[in-house]
Each structure stands twice: as structure tokens, then as C-alpha cells.
Image (tube, rainbow, N blue to C red; front, side):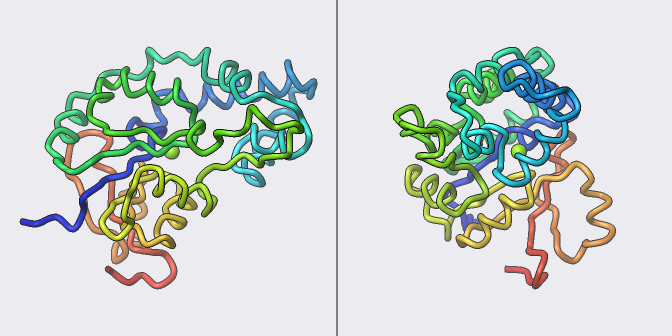
Length: 240
Ligand SMILES: [Mg+2]
């Protein structure tokens, strides 16, 4: 049967490996450590600021730079990702088999830096399953040339500019691509650009109970991807 897709675009963190690994928690701890050690915030302030900056700017780094903190992306990523317990991410042969069975072009599209993306993919033993990695560096090539922190705002999903840039760089026609991400804002942005979208959620059974008419089973594997459902839109609930 012909597929409507010639390309699949995958988010990485909490999409290709579950948040239960402990990596996401470690990232949060490291970000708060960065705010305390490098920026001088108190422990209490660091915790609330991390959440506030994520909500307002998409990431702590984006928020700090927008607020005028001269934080280098490499320093930030080195601190936040460089000391993660990556051994918590185990090889996922079922995921590998699933990806190998998909003949279409496969692309990683992550807000994380390239080192983090490559390390995670290697730990999962799926690095060779992907044709291209669109990551922080792809979306922010001029950041290191900035003469002041807010000269080039950090570009990340779900901003439309970031989404458009990723599709352009990867030469993806949204009409024939499927975009999978665990963040509903990212999925909504992708949908607005014409991509077919998949919301990856661990509480899929809960969502399915309440919003069952808006999802349909996409994959049925006894691993993380069991919890992938096709996202059909929150507002109109129309199937496409
Ligand atoms: Mg994610």
C-alpha cells in the first residue's frame, strides 16, 4: 500500500526514549545547578525561574539570553547535558527494528544540542537509522557571533520560524511528512504548517478514554512507541 509520507520527523527527548529513564529529571537538576552556580540565584529562585523561563522563552538558555545574561550555548549545554547519566538510556532493539522497517527518510528534530542528540541516539543504538539531525545548532547558527546576548533570539520549537527553518534545511514537504513529538505545543505548530502530526504521550490510555475520537492507533509495539497515537487536532477534532 502506498504511504502518504515520504519523510518522518522525530523529536528526540521523551519521544524516542521515555522520560522515566531519569534523564529529564537530571536535566532539570543540572539547569537549576547552572542557575545557582553560574548565575548566582538561590536554590528556591532557581527552581521557580527554570519553570518561568521555559514557559516564557522555550528554554532556560533562551530566557537567560533574552534577559541579558551573556551565557554561551556551548557552556550551557556542557553544564546541563555534559554531565548527564547517559548510561540510564539503554539500547532499544524493538525501536530499532521498528525504525528499520520504515523505509521513508527519517529525521531527528530536537531543541537539544548535537552532542546530546548523538549521545542519546548511540545509547539507544539507533543513530544509523536517521538521515539527518536538526538540532539547536541548526536553528541557531549565528549565536556565537552575537555582540550582545539578545542580538539573536534563541530559536526553538515551537516557534514558527524554527519549524519553517527545520523543514527548509531538511528539504521536507510538510504535505508528505509525519511529525512526532511529545510536546503538544510543538505538535500544534507542526500541524499549523501542514504536517501530519503525532502526539507521543505516556498517558495515552487516559487520553484515549477521554479523547478517543481524536486519536487512532499508529503503532502497536510493546515498547515506548505503544503510546504513540495520531494526533487529530484539539480544536476541530476532525480527522484528516
Ligand atoms: Mg521531547
